[in-house]
Image 1: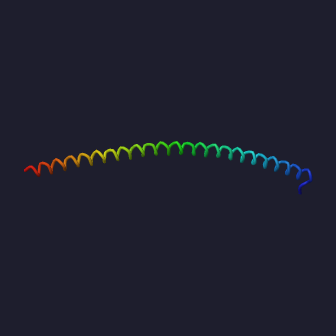
Image 2 (image 1 turned 30 degrees about the vertical axis):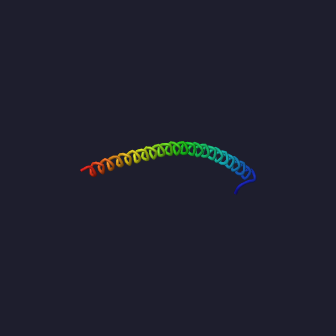
Image 3 (image 1 turned 120 degrees about the vertical axis):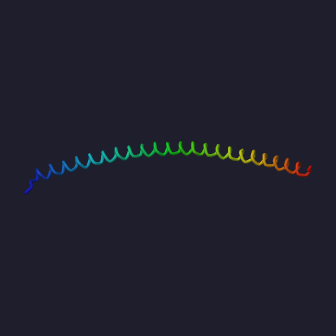
Length: 86
């Protein structure tokens, strides 16, 4: 059987363990929040870099298409001029 003294020790020990668990939980929450905040910041930075690179590639592709189109126009017009002369 437990005595009132044993019960008091048990309750005090339980309170200490609960406070320790609460403190550890708070530390874990803060560490998790910091980690998530860093990850979000890093992902946003990566997204901005990818967006910039994609925009640059699209602009280069558009320019290459325009150049190809102009070259094709030149070839076609030269071909038809040559064709009409013969």
